[in-house]
Length: 246
Ligand SMILES: *Cc1c(COP(=O)(O)O)cnc(C)c1O
Image 1 (spheres, protein in one colour):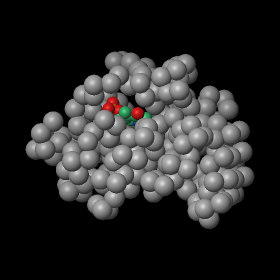
Image 2: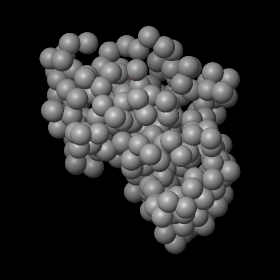
Image 3: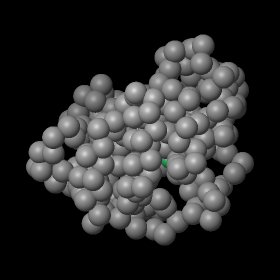
Image 4: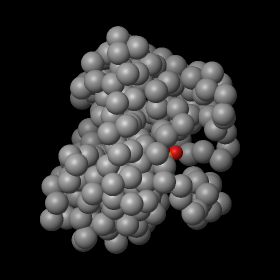
């Protein structure tokens, strides 16, 4: 993808976000565009930074580490959206990640909290929910999401800010929408519990193929990669599939 194409894509997506917000009766400022930068080289990411798009996220710790050095001189915010193995916790924390969106099990949360305690730091986290119930996807099962949130809330160095999901893989958008509605419903249930120290403002949902629908259903962060940087060579299963991630 040429630099000017990236810039064009970014402004086009921004426009589509604005239109989706209008349709949903929401303010465009309520929705942040996060750039999913897996496989994208640092030079291309910097093009987006220069245009003012500075919220990015990686899926793999190795890739995060490689790009961190190249990008650290340009102010930006890093989230982590991939499957996190506990033996990579130290590495992820070295890269100044502001938020880990993919907390999907208590043992990961606990080990992350232990490490943060040692380092005297805190980090923002989202609970990742497998709203599509597809086996290939990570995330806590919807019926266990509240329990996991309550458990993670007891860990003082993790600051829960919201929920994340990957919608169903389907070209039929009306089959994807219920995933987003379910995440919103779980969010509302957690808010009603009034858990101390738990904020539930953020809903990270929606990608290139479904971000407008996610906005209609309440997304505060949409995660877009392909529409900005072009098609990737690796299939997403390389990043998402349980066996591939091992
Ligand atoms: C790759 C990825 C995205 C962005 O996907 P696109 O279809 O390229 O927009 C969003 N969320 C997660 C977790 C991803 O791995």
